[in-house]
Image (spheres, rainbow over the protein chains, first blue to last red):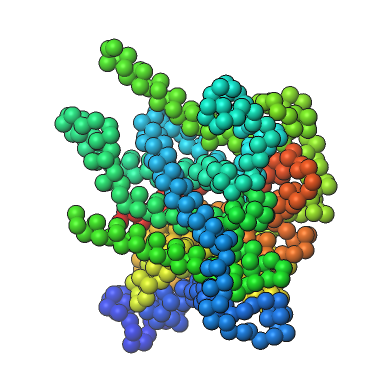
Length: 338
Length: 283
């Protein structure tokens, strides 16, 4: 691009600063755009992508949840057929829907709570470690965060493998009487962790907790670093213990950070797909489905039932919307009160 | 106990806790790598063998030559790389343009656009999956990596804009104004002044998009049916379908899939965290 052109910027849209510049004989390059249009032009590709790949499909999925979309409709042999609320009433009658819903919600509640608790504890710990030690621990936990979800599923599936998994080896190390008293058994070899919904979720919770606490820790650490040390000194002088200091100083000051972390965790944990899919080795154990896997397996089974898959996806989206909206509202409210 | 002794004890306790956290975080990854270099009799055992005493490259060799589902793991790694790089190239450009718009200009609809970006974070991929599957089929992009690239651009763009926006906003506006006064055109100002300063942020955002696309499973699972077009996350599933699961091969493939991501991740982790929570900390 050359700047040799000296054509003054014309047109009636020029704003005050531009007029000033023109008075000072600023050599300018003609740009065919009025300044007001620039941001919109810059946004065009982004808006097209978001509208075409997110907004429009979002509307489409709602529409499809009221249609019958089977093989005949996909291949265009038959026109789309409106079925009203039938997809919804059918999934509401299905036991798998209710177990999926229960699994989704229970998993999210437990995992979000654990992630925030463990993540915050580790964040506080990191803040008290020496610089070198905290860097060392951060690199380690970042490694856990970075592992691809599918690899996470493979790794934890291997750790909990029935025949040769290290978890069974570890449990076999327990003294027989203790293992007997706690779990009613002493030999763990062959324990099929990944065949039963409850134990699948036990493994899934550990997997997701393992990979998601680092983000909370690092964010909390970043927040803690921004709190002036004088506050803590003052608290110590006033005789405040560590527990009290955390709830009276650290937590209120980091509340905005916790808000974001909680919302993000809820959003992420409600939609867990890859880890669960890999741990189960595909959509196998129907009782262990969550809404994501259930929607996928309905829509892409043979013969496909895309309408009912869409209805399940809509239910999941509505739940996410409600949870996030309630949470954001409460946060806004409590900010106003203070 | 003297205060000094107590202080020392506290330090030991803290360092021990730190080490425990480190070990818990790292062990599963270590176990994956260790397993991929163990011989089968050391893998399929009820004993605990902390590290491979008979180091073997058999599993790596096997996944790279025989592979799974009819192709070498190289094919799947290449497909994943194509999808991820394609996503980054297209996505970064779009994200940079949009981020500049929202960080540098005040215009009608700006707030709605930002809220839209946040809402987009929440939309589950499963909700988009069915309509997009049908659309991709209509467009003839089914079984094409290009289809996956398009989808991944859509999935990563909202967050990319959101993250990049803070980097653009951090560049002092006076620099651009100075260039502007010196007679630089809008494009030159953007390219010569803003771009170099935003480049680190752009790298961070790109790596984030790369990782997201590299890890994406559900669309890759539904939009590709020919095994030569599988990406790594899909290919890995095929090891589980086999009788007598080959854990050496699974762990070797997982290692190959994980290494690039972990390296990238460690490079940008600090920026990524600041991008994610920036809005919260700065208000």
